[in-house]
Length: 111
Image 1: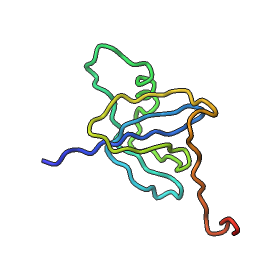
Image 2: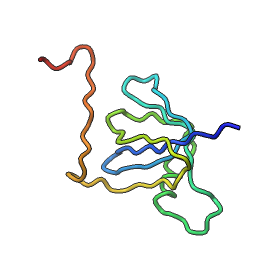
Image 3: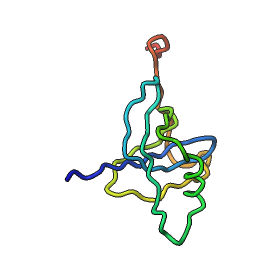
Image 4: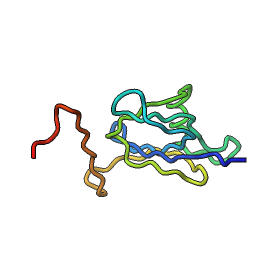
């Protein structure tokens, strides 16, 4: 039996950093987007509830597939097992993450 693949996707949205787990990721048919589907959330039987993950569950309730802009994605990892999703505040100037420039045919930089 083949093991199920799980991806951890970290992206920025409206001044916050989201960390979600998904079973499938692929390039989107929308230019400049990545398609993330089959979102995975923590076990429902746990006694301790994480408010951040509960917010994620309510925000993505009913969503079968989401398209994330490539420039908002910080990192995508394939992981051995899923963890708990969370939302944290993005702090300006912390870390060394920079946006990756995306060029189309008409706006390539001049050399």
